[in-house]
Image (cartoon, rainbow, N blue to C red):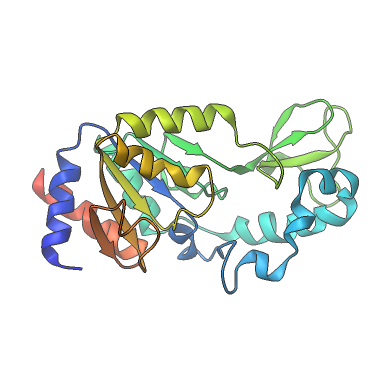
Length: 250
């Protein structure tokens, strides 16, 4: 990555009328959260079929111990890293309209981001599959598994998207609307393989947005969609980019 690329990205981001960020697992790896795919990913250690919605409904006593281990015991220890904090600072500066994320870890909100669209839901909430009420995950004891619904005693499911489950319609609609309006799209820590979320940067690009990509290595976006590629770790590159933007507006 050349210094010119960083300065050019900062200039474009600093002048943006409406900028969005699209993030994936790579931004949270530096917080100690493993990705789902690839070597060492969650699906290399656990059978993804166990996290299919109908299988979960039929075998909650088998699946819930896995859910607790992967998504509550391990994720609960994670803290936001400098990349999450940099995006929150951009929003505070009025330079970022929203974060659209594929992550379910809640680290963007923990870092201070306020406008976050979670494409795949969140570990921070649970929903009863019987009475349909929502609950803050922190209020639910996981000493007994499956945990009973506090309202009706029914089956609680973490409010993130299981296999065979639809993407939240309102999130998809609003994310697509923002992508069509944006003049800058930051792509951070994602290769864009998971659909329909992965289309967001291309929707933005097709509508005329400048796409600034931050990834450790080239992705499916880099050659055909990305305008400026800043190669490196999100926790290093994003703070450098934000510092450059701040310097231009000091």
